[in-house]
Length: 175
Image (tube, rainbow, N blue to C red):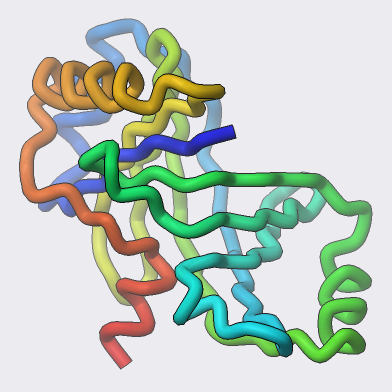
């Protein structure tokens, strides 16, 4: 799957939340996400623009691989593979035994909404601030997804320079 995403820093989540409610977006819940990122022993994910993450929420842990960012869509786009694991702690021990190293942790509180084929995330990220993400998962046509995301952003009054960096990259740049 190809993840196409617009991420924008915002001063307040309130007007966007209200706009989503006014448009009858489906509220999918609010949760704390504790993400632990790893680097591989055989290549540097910072250099290859990849990411490996173990995410802890209220449910099972989620392991995510994110491929190199694809710049041709104008927004942040990359391959994303996810799988749930019964025990994130055991999976982290496996990574440790294989020589993977922890690189950083990201904590965020996220409200999730669904409107049409788009997911909206209203994020409060420790050490970074507040952000809105609009995401569409595309099998093939990334250009079409980019157009849909830009249309949603305009309709929702979400403006600002798209942030192509991940929360991990933003957090590491503050160190």
